[in-house]
Image (cartoon, rainbow, N blue to C red):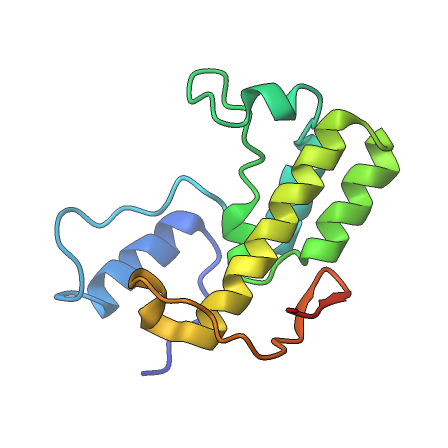
Length: 143
């Protein structure tokens, strides 16, 4: 199916997609509250303040999370780009170290998933051979 790309407003796009994808979703068709695209990703990255991240990242009330996940997931931002932006703006602090550590864990688990696929949901021990996993530009060798 080739989707139209000439619609200019979010409302037009939502109505068109609801009709084009009818039967593929349940409930009312409504666009995500998260704006997509590279410009929105960069705005979100610039708006993210890493101060207090280490303390508030798991606090759902204070919303200490970056809200960058959808942009990372869909390739609008790279992990290295986010890391460089945060370190460039805030320097090396306990909060930036924790944030970069979380980026590294994200990369690690993506690699594990790429290796194991759906087996990631089962109790599995990675083989004892050299994995050559690469995480944020560093090659890790299993010993």
